[in-house]
Length: 172
Image 1 (tube, rainbow, N blue to C red):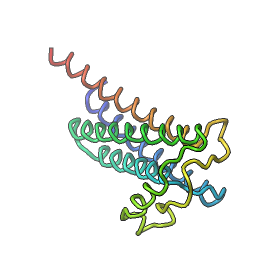
Image 2 (cartoon, one colour):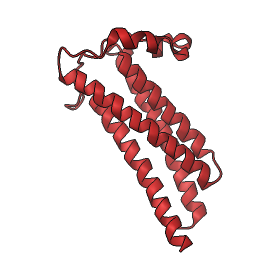
Image 3 (tube, one colour):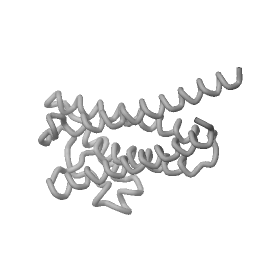
Image 4 (spheres, rainbow, N blue to C red):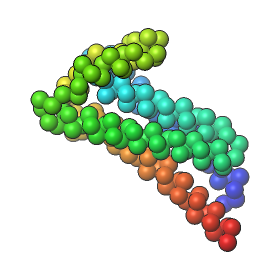
């Protein structure tokens, strides 16, 4: 595969990743409004991280060369790693009843971020982290977020790794 078609494919995958992240946030909004599952501070943080990954993916897809794509894929990997940590923490809280996420400590911080003022219906905290909603296909919501962040991290790191190996072999 030549470098131009490989870059075009990578950029298409970034666009797909961006839309997947937007769909995940859309799913969270559906659960919030249709199923009345109020978001907690960690839920809102995970929304921010999915939206940040979408932004990085779309901007990375708009880059003309590999260096720009690699920069934004690196930012996606870092953001996905933060998402893994947040979702794992959230899952731990839900699997250990009586253990709080620090609602009082996190809520003012999350609610003071500018998007919470611009779109309070999307970014304002309304629930508690330890509230367990019905699982989807046997997996709790933070578990699905953990899976999504993990897959995104693995895919982007694998892509960066493959490209690094390809550059090493072509330079030799």
